[in-house]
View 1 (tube, rainbow, N blue to C red):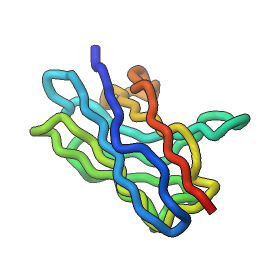
View 2: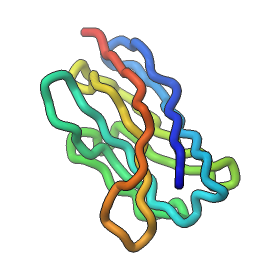
View 3: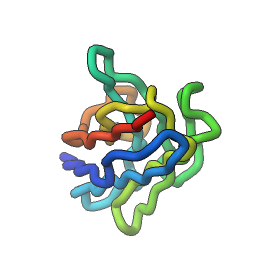
Length: 119
């Protein structure tokens, strides 16, 4: 069982930057693929990006590619999402998620943190 807690959300102006963190309660994160998702009001939850268990194998949605960066520190059981050049359409609740390596289901989710980008 993995418990995930996001932090770092807030209000930022268009073009600004914000960093999110996801702290995990697992004994180690090295067995998990970590991901970030987001859900804007009235829209379905969408994939933002993911990172492999060793820190390689990063994947991003086209909408954030080149602006967002995912990283992880397994020693600290923490995953990060750095968001640059933010746009109003990035406004959403951002969720951290984890899935066990070699599986496809995102089994563990955080409670989410709000990111609001003002125009």
